Image (cartoon, rainbow, N blue to C red; front, side, top):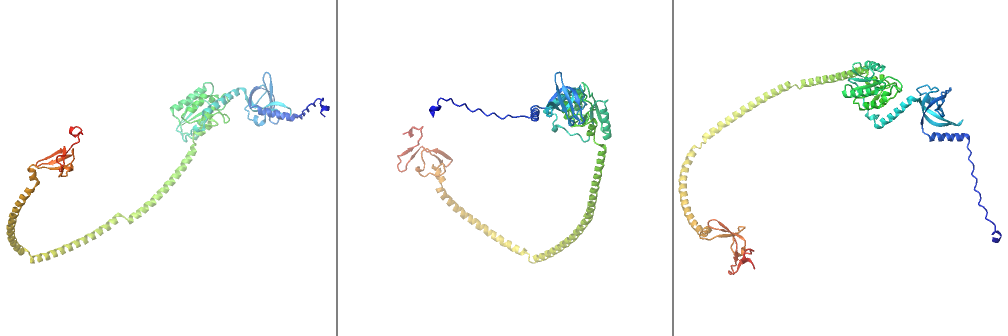
Length: 481
């Protein structure tokens, strides 16, 4: 077998399997292309000239946006185009915001709009959005920094044009709601290049003077360009730095400005701002009447309670009047006084009778005779006592002389007078033998007159008189070995 097939060439490897082809339909391709476009591109702003405008009965708008070298099919559906602030026409220069998409039925590439505005207003709108984002990031719109409005301001300041319709509306509303509140007007321009600096300066002036409890920054309606002074950064920062609460009433209800976001409270119109800052006089009157009625009711109830308590106290006082109590106690005092007088008189009478009885008994047993006899015996006894005492004194004096002579003979003082001394150690113990002291020890010697303190230099033994113990003193040569 090996020899038969040894000269044959090897077989080629098998060819790979051909993969099955994936076939798209137009619908599938258009659908996936639409998904790729809508997911791959974010919302865009496009500026161009409007042309080929079509508005069918459905209410949707179909048109093209073009520039010098290209055009783009666009669609804006009814639920979005009803929010547009103008009526589009062919040839208008517009700014549109939307997303790229694809109309699957025809495979048309198109731009679906959700907002459209005239191109000039669009530039301002972009500036508005940029400034709004900047100030929001700095915290100028933070809700926690917004201050509450005073319930009853003492004075209201209005920053607006003195000749516009806004000031007339504000004054009319303030007069109708609470006519007694004073109003201070800060006249400024509300439109044009000089408007924003004037508005900011008026806000700072009002804050520095502190004449008002609340400020209204107001202007009537208009286009975005007309209201632009209230979108300037200088005005926003002046509102933020103001020490007085500010209500912004600029434009109509659909208009929003930067001043609205920075102010402590936004009103849809100047009239709405006046409604916010001024309380309703009628409502305050009704509340005052209600509070007055409640107060009167409380006072009446309190008075009734106090009158009832006063009557009860009056009756109790009548029952326990101090005058009645004093009269009763005075009567008891009189009774006690009479009893005491009777007791005292009876006691005195009893004592007088006893004194008379004792005096009679004393007279019957008078000691005068006994005293006279006792005085005679006393004189005799006194003479005998004097003689006996004299004899005893003489006898004791003789015995005393004998004992004194004997005592003088054995007295240690007599021995001291003869030149002897009493020697004791430092503790006061009398020394009777030389063995009780050591060389260097301090001793005291009692003489007949005075005392001597000394130090033992050496000690001689009574059994060996020739043996002398010297003091061990390093400075004495005799104490060295």
